[in-house]
Image (cartoon, rainbow, N blue to C red; front, top):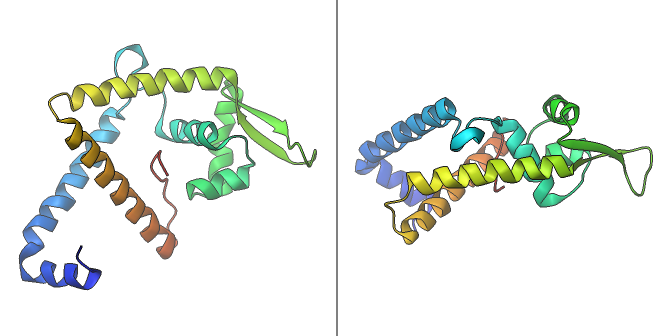
Amino acid sequence: MPTPEMSMDMTTIGDTGLLDALQHEVAVFARRAEQTRLGGVGQVRNSMDRAAYLLLNRLDKEGPMGVKALAASMGIDSSTVTRQVAPLVDTGLVKRTSHPEDGRAVVLQLSPRGQSRLEEVRSSRRQLMAELTQEWAPEEREAFCTLLTRFNSALSARMAVTGVSVEPSATS
């Protein structure tokens, strides 16, 4: 595996074209993902925005937590989480409950309705991913997922170092 120094040397020697192609494809991917919101298929298509999906997904995977803990786990600030959670509470997808150990603190929790809605959206998005990659071998799907996860992790780490807040991938 190349070290960062080796990668830099390779870039200056002749990898510029590949890096140009990579940055272009990432830009196109970002545009296409935003245009379609990669929302899924059928009636559920585009029915949940990215912020709501990532928040619900995080609460599902990590369980009930306070606003500060949720913000920290997602790499965004508390005011952003508060603003994004409000409509989820209003629509009954997330519940505010008292912290089990400190009744004064508020904990956010996925409601049964939120759990059901999240699974509906996940299923639709899973179907879209299956359609988009139907001609790919299972190893290609796995490699793409591994590399995309690695890319997202590197981007999140870079943003953390530079102090820029970004929303991590659904898996982080």
